[in-house]
Each structure stands twice: as structure tokens, then as C-alpha cells.
Amino acid sequence: MSNVFLVTGGTGKTGKRVAERLRARGVSVRAVSRSTQPALDWTDEAGWDVVLDGVYALYLAPAEGSRATAAFAARAAQAGVRRIVLLSARGVTTPGYFDDQEVLARQFVEGETGVMASGADWTIVRPGWFMQNFDEGDFLGPVRAGRLELPVGDGAAAWIDAEDIAAVVATLLVDGGHDSKAIELSGPQAVSLREAVALISAETGRHVEYVPVTEETYRDRLRASGLDDLAIAVASAGLSAIRKGSEAVTTDGVRRVVGRDPAHFEEYVRRAADAWR
Image (cartoon, rainbow, N blue to C red):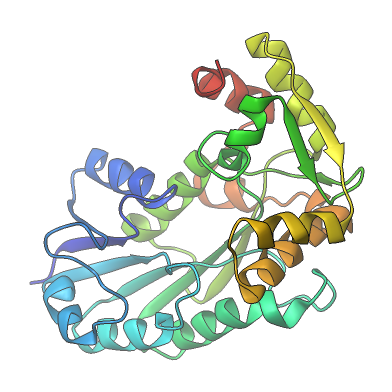
């Protein structure tokens, strides 16, 4: 009988936290990435069957830019996987949520469609912008340098803690109960970039300022860093949801699944403060 819980992106922001929570529930966990054994290489379909052997439930966190999600979900169902929880993103099925909606949403929508058609029981989680962008992602360097420059004006986001995403995913994998649903996840309140860096400054004693820049300036800097045009377009589209106010709307997704409210930004800052000191 298959009893393994497979976590893809096992070293990523959500994957490592999902694996920890599943282990705490006492289930058998196989957390995989390119560097694990067995390894998951999204471009090498011949190696997928080894990764999927004996798997009961799957947390599917697609690799950035990969178009293999649908094919992997189909292979998983064929291998006997009974339940799939897919990591997607808020707004990908909402027209006008982002600027350049198609360029950002295409990969996510293809993945969602593939999981729905796989034949396994499925739930899709659609989180908004992660709090962890500030201490584990692209904002970390600028925050440490004291100046975060982004093209979002005075926009705010209901930032979601990756710990809450992991709690939702682990509950869905082990307990089920939300089959054939897409659940949007957010934090409990909208926090602007200016408010976010002020909270970090107050907690750490490090002076950090947020400086709005134009879209053109932001794109030029990404281009100078070596990103290609598609990656730049995706990054800009994602930030546009903050500027447009799309990401400021809160949801009850965390409470619906785990029965409690999600973490406030202040709680996250206290927990992550050492990253900025």
C-alpha cells in the first residue's frame, strides 16, 4: 500500500515547511528537489517514476518557469497517487488582477488545469505575496542595505506567512476535506511597503526606507542584473498586483482549513528579525 507523502520543492520556502509539519504528524515524507536522492529534475521525465514510487499524497510546488506541472500530475495519478495539493497563486484566474495577466498567469493556469484533469483528488492553494520575500527572497539584500526600491507606489499587500501556507497544505494532505476546491490564502491585514520596512526598522534598529520607483527604472535594473525579457515581464506583472490594490484584499482561506487566523506581519517580523540584524 502506498503511504509516502511526497513534497516537491523540498528545500524551498513552502516545501521545507510542509515537510516539517508532515513529519510532525508522523507520516512518511519524501522531500525532493534537484539536489536530493532521489532527485526531481523537471526536465527528465524518465526519473519521475522513481520519485513517485509508493506515494499516496503529493504537494506539488512547481519550479519557477517550468511547464511540466500538468504532465507530472498526470504521471503521479497513473503511479497511484490519490491526493494532490497544488501550489498556485492568487489572481491567476481573475482578469485584470495583474498587468500583463497572460504572461504571469499562463504557467499557473496550465498547472491548475492539469491537476484538475489528472484523475487524483485535488485541492489548489492560491497564496498571495509571501512575507518571506523580506528575509528569504528578493527583498532581503535591499532591506539589509537600508533601501528597498519597487514600482508599487503606495500599494499594500495582505502578505501571507509561509508557515501558514505550510499549515494549510499539511492539513489538506493528511486530513483532506476540501477536494475539488481552490483556496485563496492571505494574511489578516493589508500592509504597505512603507509600513513593512518601518516595522522591520522598529524591531531591529536598522534604518530601512522604501522608495517608490518607476516601472521603467525597475525593468532597467532587472535587465542590468542579467534577467531575460520574460523573467522581467513576470516580475513586473507580479508587483503590479500590489500597485493596483489587488493584493490588499484579505481572505478567510487559512481559517477555513486550519481553524485559526493567519499570522500578522508584526509576528513575522519578530520571528525573522535576526535575518536583518
